[in-house]
Image 1 (cartoon, one colour):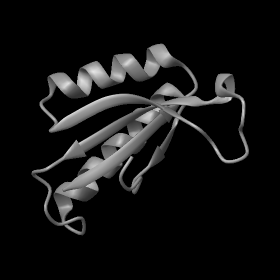
Image 2 (image 1 turned 90 degrees about the vertical axis):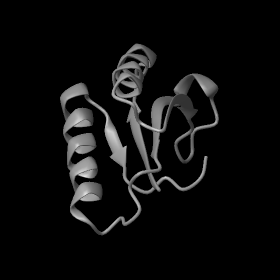
Image 3 (image 1 turned 60 degrees about the vertical axis):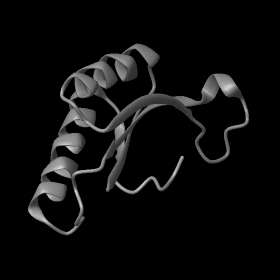
Length: 89
């Protein structure tokens, strides 16, 4: 299993990307509110797209690296940042 978190300041950007990734057939895609370290105000929390893919069984293999590279490019295009190892949320 492979998990990823793509974080954006705008909700609409996160929702649009989540819809695109969901249409592609990833195992799980959802938009979540992401609290950054030191931010207590809910209004300051960013929006994240959590992606889980069950078909990636070895994180060290080329398919997993390809997903990381793709997600890094997607957040760069849309002004966000990428967490390749979000753990369970």
